[in-house]
Image (cartoon, rainbow, N blue to C red; front, side, top):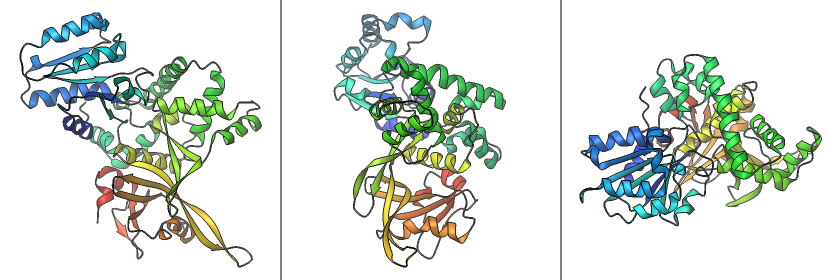
Length: 418
């Protein structure tokens, strides 16, 4: 099955010959190896690169295990370069290479070598991996399949595909399974036997019961405002367990460094400043989140919100939670200031979008609730409400766009539509 990942291919193509080590990062099993050794490899061949000028080494292959030795790897690559034309060095599972930082930095001294690497252990997945290369690394962050990528490979009825995506997410391997039991089993085992064990080992976490319970709490309350102190209070009141907020923050940092979760900070839209706490957390893949809860909590409204967040991140936006202060009458008839929330403030350079995720707009009160924060923002950036209903693109009388989730996800340019 061929999966198109043109966004990431273009990111690699744009970075060709830039004198830096291209480091492909992302959560385990999101498609890093496929991107480099299949999609990018084929691109090079199709654009005239001789196979002899593509030096591809898969360090998890027993037949190539000798190249895990630093000197063997370096000497092999140097010996494979026979002329002055450009060579493309592609190394998969580079964390298996001893002294890999020194070896890769050594490759940068070869003028006709362009270096691309990927890795899959928790050290290499750390968000600060680029610092290993002392400013000589160029990160290409990839995500599990977006719904558009998922649907391009799956096909069929797009609403049935949406239901499947909301349940099992976008890890590429999901597309190879033929029934629900296989998909669920894959995700549960991946979480328990790979993700958690990696993080525990890398960070020397001893109280793994508390760590795993924290994951459950975050998965159950995805998209809810929280902070380490509130989470510590939950442990104390509900779980009858005492854990310090500082420890919870450490655990959350570990999950973020492994790309399992992401944090959306609160941003005061009118005051143009960040609010330090609380924040929202989203899972990198809704299938991973659902598997952690054994598929017991399938609230489509929260899942849809998580999908929109991931879509915006995959499109290259930084994403915050917006806070807008409005004036509202209280029960005594007096006007009071009240903060209301914009689900997402998406920024990329000079571009900004204010986005509400509204699963249903079943009543006029619900419509007013979703529109209220948006109409209170007096700048000229586009304001949108994304709903489950199949709506292609609608402006209301105050310039707010309403769009269906499927239409939003399947059109990569949906934010720019007029």
